[in-house]
Image 1 (tube, rainbow over the protein chains, first blue to last red):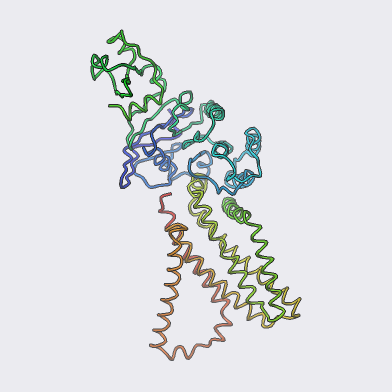
Image 2 (cartoon, rainbow over the protein chains, first blue to last red):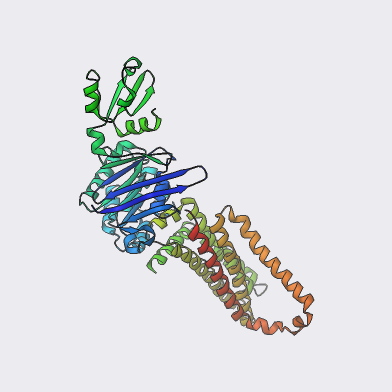
Length: 283
Length: 224
């Protein structure tokens, strides 16, 4: 299998935080969702991939060490960073003029067509836009130079549900050629429900689950029960348990196995949000 | 080179944002030079004022970059740290250079129109070049501080470090004067002044090269 991105044993130590042996393998044509709460290490991982900070471990992009990438290689990477962009005094036209200088493959036609489609005014400075509008421009900048790998840090932050739907559609089209890939961090897990092929859950610098979305959909389960029913269930038959008000939520590794043991209890497919919540907060 | 042009353009767009203020200031300066020229020859003073007021504006581009955390984004594009630092120095140099050239041209035209002639053009240009070198020194001392501590935190160091340099050079000069008084007696100040363009040129090359090298070393190791 060919990978657009490989993160091998990535480690980064800060005084009060330790990113602990992160491994990511992103094949061509796939989307990986990198999920975790704020401060869990998602952005540190992205910064390491982009070589913005020093780290231990090995990161390969298009099969090459990320420290040895040529300009041509870097032109094939599209990036959205949640907290960083051009100065807010620039407008859409200024950004186009700059990007034309930075990318040989900058597709001006696509840029302006999409700007028109998004109904973004061209002469207004970025500072006058809502955060959602700014995010649209960031996403557009990441796509308009025809990259092969998208690295997106919270790309749906601040977006309304309609645009989130549109953008998810855009990302699905992006990987449909089976050559392009996306690594996307988010804490809005619902965005990944119809997008990700694989999800990696990170908590406090540790990967707590690395699993295909298909496996979650087909095998994992969740069950809501009261305390008296919980007492009947053996600890080894579920992964995590979270008590919320009077109900106990159990995360199951296999709905089928659970059904065989407890036929009277009905389980259902969990959402990614439920999996994340139970993995992080559950016992 | 295309990337450097893009980075210069990015900084130029910052200036575009306060073009109204710049135009107003230029008009005010021209007015002041015109008024002063009616009384005295302000060719040199006018040129230097232009340089000080407009030539040092380029530092503000660092603030805009810092506020938007632009460096992080730029480094995720096909842009290297070396290109970012290089473009900053190029922008600072071009801005200072254009400011002094504009100042000289404006003062020259106004002085010629009002007073009919300019006294000691060569000497005035030498003084302008000396002023340009002083501004280069200040800017070149500032930039590594900004890369090391940021615009806000580096503000104090940006003042202290050049002041410390000047103080040390003063002390050194004083010591040499005490230790080797005959050496100073031999110095021909007029000859040195005549040579000042060459000395200034060499000093400018020295300031920019050393400052660029220090800034790049700081920025190359910096976690963004």
